[in-house]
Image 1 (cartoon, rainbow, N blue to C red):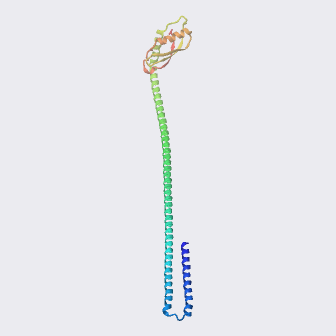
Image 2 (image 1 turned 90 degrees about the horizontal axis):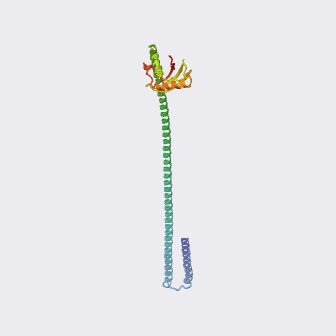
Length: 270
């Protein structure tokens, strides 16, 4: 705006100078006509003075034009510098915004990558734990099945061994019976018990009692209980005491005849 005002002022000033010069010339012409006697020598300074003033005006105008041009150039230069500074500032701001945006994008990408890696790791750990649990469960099932088969095998072997032992024992017992060893063993037991029996006054002739005896392989008696008997309570107790006093009982002639639980037929008159 200052440049425009200065330009307008210069134009007006130049126009006023031109009008003044023209007026001076116009006024000077009649003066030369009315006074024809004026010599060339006399009028020359007037014309010369007019020329000198115009040149000065033109020089002044040129100075003003130069000043106006310089001002315009200065204004244009400052305007260009302002635009360049504004462009540079805008570019700097854009670059900073882009840098911040890029940094945020990188941070967000890094965060998402970390979350993805963590999720994959957690999922892998979950799958590993599940697989480990399944393997352990399968191992337990396999062990239980193996234990069941082993137990069944042991039970079957034990049953077979027991059956074989029982068969062998029965065979030995049968052989011992056939050889009369069992009858001999029974007579040995009855004789030992009779030797220890103290006959009570209430005992009647013809006693016939069955005594259940539990013994050890050594012949030591664990218990003795009269199961059936035709005697009274005193007779029963006397027979049980006689069995306990007869401990240890005689060992059988053959080991196959040993029985832990015996049923001894006690007949003292025989």
